[in-house]
Length: 199
Image (cartoon, rainbow, N blue to C red; front, side, top):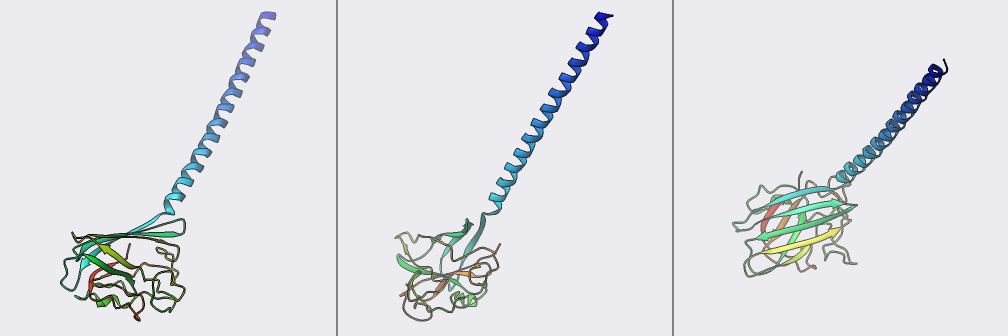
C-alpha cells in the first residue's frame, strides 16, 4: 500500500512538474511571438516612412537630353539625385515647375516655376527669397553628363501640403544658366528636358 501511495505521489508530482514546464514554455513562446510581432511592425513602419519617386526626363525643344531624377523622402527630408546626359559642356539650370505636364514640344505646358509662397525668384536659400522650385545650376562635363544632388525639408512626397508637396509638378532642365536675379525665372533659356513627378 505504501508503495502504491508513493508511486501515486511520484506520478502526480511528475505530471504537475510537466504541466508547469509546458505552461512556462508556452508563455516564453508567447513572449517571443509578441517581441517578434512588435519588431516586424517597427520594421514595416520604418519601411513605410521611406517614399521614393523616379522621374524619367524626356527631351523637348529638339534636344538630345536624357536622364532621370530620383526623389526620396525619409525622416521629413527629401533628397534629390538627377543624372542627366546629352547637354553641352558648362552650366545649366534645373527647376521644379508648377504643372506636371510635358506634352508641349517646347516644355512650356509645365508652366512657370513652382512658387507656392509667392516669393521672388532667387538662389536657393537666399535671404531675399526664392521659389520652392529654384533648384539652381549644375555642371556638365565634356561628355555632356551632369549630376545634381540636393536635400531639403521644404519638400515632401504626397503629404498634401500645397506649400511642400512636389507630386504633380514637373522637373525642367534648361539649356542656359540661371542668373538668380532676373524675374520671374532667372533667364535660364530654352527648356530642353521635362519630366513629371508622379507615383
